Length: 461
Image (cartoon, rainbow, N blue to C red; front, side):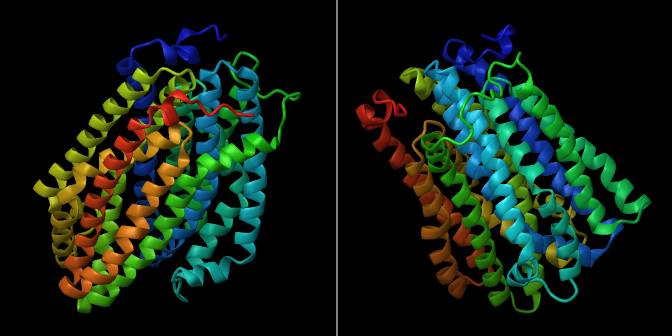
């Protein structure tokens, strides 16, 4: 047992749910906000230091970056959820197996995915819309990121485990280390050394290397409650199978996000007329804004994950319910703030990104339509992550796919034909409303089947 009570995972089954949520979610939220802010700051450095075409090149890399994150999350989220459940069952040896397996899988995935993406990089970038002007920038950026993918994968995988095994503050510090190193080094590499967009990518990698060193030091230390043990298994099929089963939900979410962005951009270009490119720019502004609030909700769900996993593993049904309900209210509160801000000062939000009056006007209209149902989004995200945290990924995958593929894509094919650009914004709102009702119905169904979902704990063979 750890000597420090604040990092003792058994607290998850005894301390009050409210104080545990504060203890675990606040550091995760700070890390999430830092990450989304540093993406924005990175774009500003590239825009000012390299030029407008470099920003366009960077935008082309977003779907590929989404795929990198998808393969990362496949292991990171599954590993975190299973390790929490094992700790709840007081099975330290199996939790240690999970840490070893996550490390091994991260290395294998990064080499296979990074290698294949590097070989076919030009074809991939062309597929995502790179032109003769933007391709060189996109290639320069992604080459560095893909070569460094083993560092990124292992850092993200182990950092999720750090939080799940009872060290939320350490997980926050590692995320902040990565962001700070990047923000300090990016302007030096871009402006001082003249390395251009490649400098931004190298700065990103340096930040992750610093953070990875900190995380590895934790998991190699015998003082850590769960740490690497050579004699435990490193590639164990039953553990790998469960990691993939739970990680499949965030993996598919990121893959879907990749596909959906292509559909949205196509719809905007088709019905935008003379302002088609500005409409795509307006979606960029809406997307960055919505991601800012979504990342905060994700921070809350990351904080909930060890609490839910542990108490579910220990069979504490009331604590599981209480954590879920608190999480839903917090999630709705966060997205409601997003709705209030975008309804009351949409032009101020847009002005952070642009001074173009036409672009601001298109974005204003987008904010007014798309964000109408935004408070419901917080609830939907929390419920989706709840199923993931208790080791029932099928529900989570179903919720993810209904919103992004079953609802959004058909709306995008129909509504813009009727209402033009307004139809694109309305498609996103409509799919959010439908997804909210489906997630509430699914939660009610799951709760009514106590014997299946809660009382019967999915014990590993």
